[in-house]
Image 1 (cartoon, helix red, strand yellow):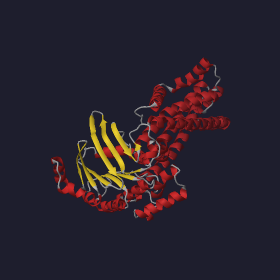
Image 2 (tube, chains in turn cyan, red):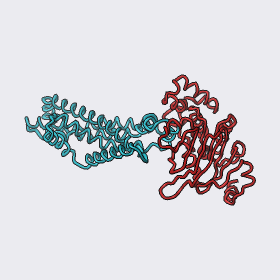
Image 3 (spheres, rainbow over the protein chains, first blue to last red):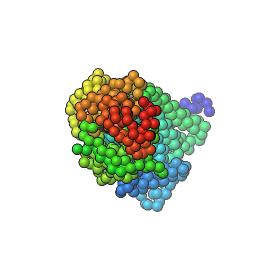
Image 4 (spheres, each protein chain N blue to C red):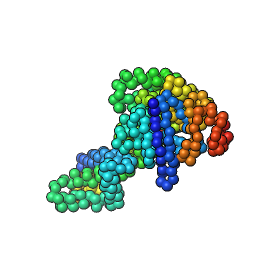
Length: 235
Length: 242
């Protein structure tokens, strides 16, 4: 593993590395955004108090049941199994044709969604109940109070956890290389297949992950500090 | 004409009854003060009136709306019932002005100009015109509570509920909040408050209700109740706080 060799490899294969890194960033970002939408939906539904009677009670309880099975399943099984199940299992069983890219994206989004649901739930619950009560006492509906009063405060507190989840998803993207998605790890594998330089290639791949995560966590830290400043001022 | 009429209200949490058969009524323009030891159920009673707590049984009627009817549009009814909380509960991510204009605008009762015009006149009424663009954290406790009163008034309620509005305040700020409440009472607002401010009860309240262990033990005109309590429990309680 010499510097010369490394620079030679990089100059030869850099378009593949960069394409891989770009794919990793794109997939993880899309998956996190989709995961946030799932998390928002589930977090809001799970924090809605169940009415004592009526049809809404049944619907809410059924939804909560489905959501907890979903969260339990995705948090309790390895992602590699989830990816295999979605790509090979579902396509095989239903005949639906799905590209590896789509299957990988769905896996990551559902996985991130399960964790982000809990972040949303925690965030919403960390807002003082008095806020919801004050909004309701003015005649605002539960959903209106959620959107105007509770969520703006909850999301502010959730930002560090969401950035952390994005970093986890970014690293987890390497797992979907097992179903053949051409992200950074898969690009590394393909380059090794053509030149057999394992050490140099894996080092480069690792380094590229590290740099990306480092930059993201710095940005995260920056936002976190800004937020805690705003928070302490708002206390 | 009754503004609020409560019949045999029972509220239980789990095993015990917090409210054990409350009958009371409040007339238009009347100011009623509920007093009682902690845990007597006075805050729960107040919170049942705008359904922040759901009554276990009994009926509550406010403005001809039966709050305890499961089919009632509670959001509609709550517009007529303003509430002021012990902990102010101002929205920390909004300025004083936005706190006040939120409900009338979100519920499409007023447009932006009208809502702001009303907010400014309410802020003027509570003496805080200059704080319209301040966030809650920039205001003192007394100022926050005055903004909270203005926020509740923005919906033009015809009943106001006050849940220990001065208990979380530093002593020097109690006066400014009470004087706002007094002027509201003078203008004829129907008010129900839970408070330990005996001075205020004496000055502004038409009637004082003494609540203990979930039942109304005694009620009377304020001076009369303080000077001539009839029940032993009322006497003991008044001895402790006066």
